[in-house]
Image 1 (cartoon, rainbow, N blue to C red):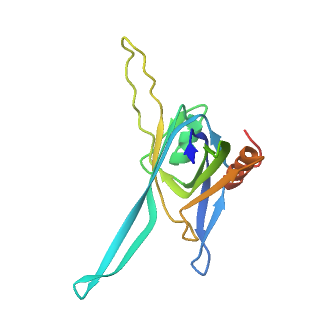
Image 2: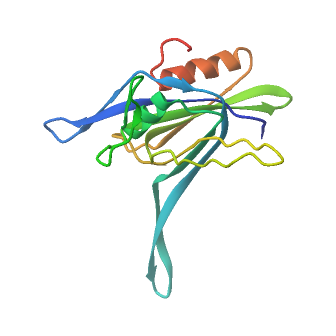
Length: 194
């Protein structure tokens, strides 16, 4: 399979509460599709522990379930920055970032198109619990040539209430693109395209 692009990036915030038994309950907010995604990089962190006996490796345990996520976009509205960063936004005051702001947990998904046996193929990748850092400002003056400066989101992903950290689903054959889009919207709790 050859991947040849990246289409759509979206998110939905989530509230995580704990019931009387100590079990976490995730409640998804209404999701949103972000404008024009350029790049997605998810890097899982693995921890390994080795047990030696009789001067040889007897057991090895590799655990995973967290890592970093970076999303490059053509643009990011102040409203989305507020939602992803736990900041305050209003048309009157703009974006207000306070030192006590807490970024919410969110779910992030993307559609990755590809080709398999000369037929369209789609993969929907969803990170199930993510927390993003504030968006950095990175601008420069225009010189002899113009260069674009684009926002990027940087965050960490974690295991969710079920111990899962990523969901990947593949679609091929007739209707694959529509099926991938439907799954993408479902994962982000979006009932209609925006």
